[in-house]
Amino acid sequence: IKEILKETGGKIFIIGQPVIFERYLTGNGFLIFDNNGNIGAYIKKRLFPLIEGRPILPRLDYITSGYYTDKESTPWLKINENLNIFMLSCIEIENDGLFNKFLEDGPSIILTGGSEVGFNELARKYQMKLSRFRALEQDKYLARATKRGYSIIVNPAGQIITKSPTSEGDYFLISEVYLIKGKTFYSKIGEWPIIVLSLVSILFSLKRLNIFSKRKKRN
Image (cartoon, rainbow, N blue to C red; front, side, top):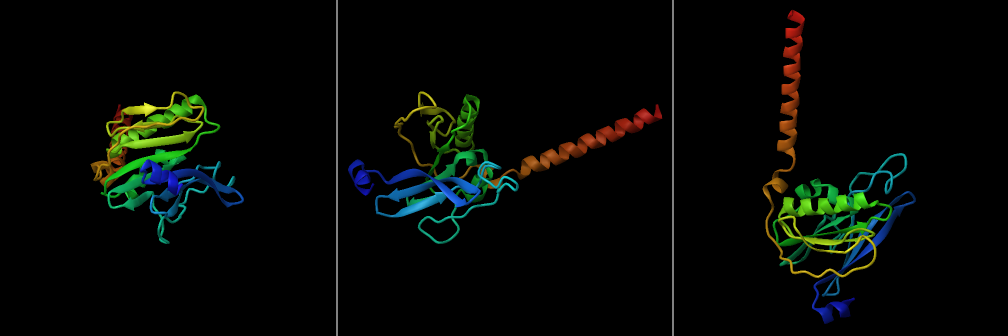
């Protein structure tokens, strides 16, 4: 792999790798090789209920692993001063909370991948739409490589630059992308404004129902 990186001028080489944590606990992960000979790993931090977790008690807790360090890992992978990767695996594309918690300000790109074996065509297209939404939401380029799913490269406007012709088969996608610094306003504040507005809306609705109920009784 080091020779491949040397010949191509590449910075990193990433391989998807299934991980078995315990007898009933499995998940997707990635092996990461850089051009300095370092080898790291990222194991997904969110597990799919029932499928990857225990049949009786789904595991939705955070899974920790290391990349160049023994400390708790994050999806934020610092390759060097000018290259950072925000890594997501499979269902993690559905979770904006990971961005709110772990995204940093350095120049970065979002990489996501995993297996969609067993997904129907509608579910595969839905995952592709989520990837477009995340790129727009975080103002980042996003590259997505999946097994039995659509592989795509998306710009920060949520537009697909290139994608695999079908969800089956193996394809190479090549495109020019840029590393973008900073965090969006949403990734900084998270979902608190939405939660507050939702609670206010519910309280307002309950109050209106209460007033309407009182008027009805009077009549």
